[in-house]
Image 1 (cartoon, helix red, strand yellow):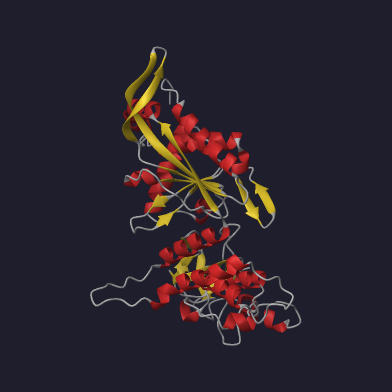
Image 2 (cartoon, rainbow, N blue to C red):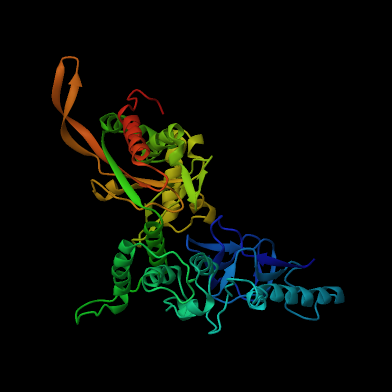
Length: 454
């Protein structure tokens, strides 16, 4: 067929929709395979959708600002060449007959999901994509509403801070404590009452969440609007704290062997590989070894089920020039040697700063490490990167006096010491496991072989 639909690609198991940010080409433009067609954004990353084939973009099926579901058509491309699309009389009757239904079908498929929920009023708890007020509700918001027993009428009364008054994830999560404290019109009369302690604390949580809406700037204050990525980071962090009870364990590790070994090899490594040898791949290698010995840290939680991950995919928190943060993922990190890890770390960090990461490169992480020592920080209490169960922060390496055990007795010497901070989800990782894990990582770093070749 001369016309094909461009579908919104899958961008990870937890991503169900994306926002159309900017169309790169217009209707009637000639495009080549792999040329970017449109810029999109999810709650994970910004990316581009490339053209699957050479041809002419004959129709855009959505507008900038629209939220589209993964797998839905967003554009139609005529692959018959640049001469077949612009002029109506330039093609055969057969081609003309094919164009109309293709466009019509794509339009129908795009519009069909909106009225579908409304056509099923008998389904208990059904939340339509669009409410009576005309306000759109994303799949994530609808899922949260269903899980919390929020009906359509109640959802319509929640104040939205998103585009055109849409209810965001943050809006509905901030609404829940107030709802739990005051009760809900949709709540069954036989519902189990909340514990007294929870009722007492809920108004404080609600008041705290409401503060940003009542702040009054002073005459010399500057108002800075959050950019889209900062809003997503904010939502993700609040969601993590709301989901997981965080516990943090700490150890101080002696990295003298690691520092001496790196100082010995870093110049040779850069000359041979054309890459810098940083501490990050060494930390990741130690974490991977610890996960192999204590695999119940490499898990995720789904309600009352624990998902034990087979693959070890390490996320590495990376600061961006804008001041925001992104977490590219080294998939199957246990399959790479130290040289491979060093090259992968440098490549992902470089492309993260250049905004050139692919969607799949920030998906699927099972454990995350963040290097707070980069900023001179000694300790950190990192927030878990959901849906993972744990995250480790590595602090600054500092020269400090320490007791050294020798055959002749204890001595005081100058050592290279660093704190490791391990935050974990206390629902599924107890203190014994969380503490053992960070201690094991510290042991691996302290036992680093100074005679190791690379």
